Length: 309
Image (cartoon, rainbow, N blue to C red; front, side, top):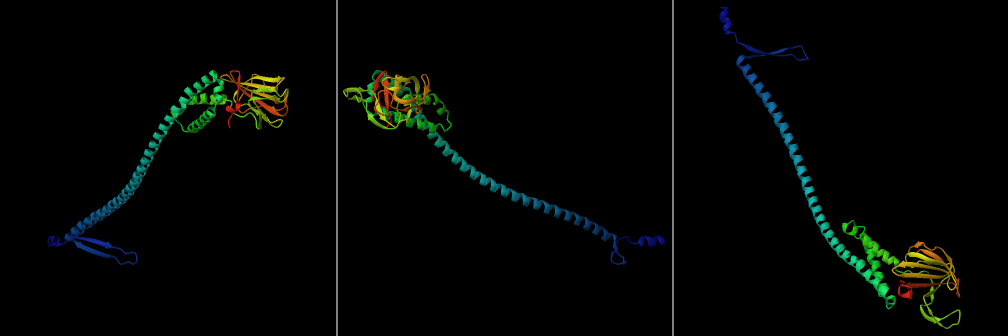
């Protein structure tokens, strides 16, 4: 009998709920078929919940990735546009650089031709015929052109260029040539007696040949070297009093007379524009002035044909 009863007994799954707020305990019983269904439903729910969370996480990650990709794409587009602008700027710079190099190349040719040909020709003509330089103002005009050319070169030297570095020797040659030319007025004042025939102001008042310029100036006014060179005489003479003579090379010398005081010595090298003496009235003189001469191969020439206006 008991065996039969045991066979008729049903299997249950009990779920016990114990609340915290009261002491009543509830028990729910589920028969075996329902328990399997509940177990299956629970497992399915867990899997579904896990799937939803995983999907949500992947979706959020994809959304974030898509957002980042959009931002990166925008940055890349901006960089691409910037790069295109820079490429255009570089192209313009390259074009301008090519033009500049072409201009420098042309300038180099002209500059070297002047230095290597013009200077030699001028010096050769100067030695053969010193007075030929005094017939017109072409020589002074050419000197002015050389000065402008040298100024342009010095401006170009601010640009780093291999071509310009090769011109250093040529530039020095031109500068030395220009510095050796007596184009600087030796003092400030009025020309009181010019080069050429005149009446002797001290002795007989007869006509005599004046070999230089007399420049009237206040006593003690600076006397400057008209060109760079070497002092070959600094002393006193009977006619010109305190006197200086400077050798500038190429057969060119300058002569400064009647000084009140000499500031350089024989054998000293002086630069163009350097103060070498003070205006005075020593020697045979009727007043404070400078007697200035330019000599080429020992022959006096008219200084006005050489001095800058």
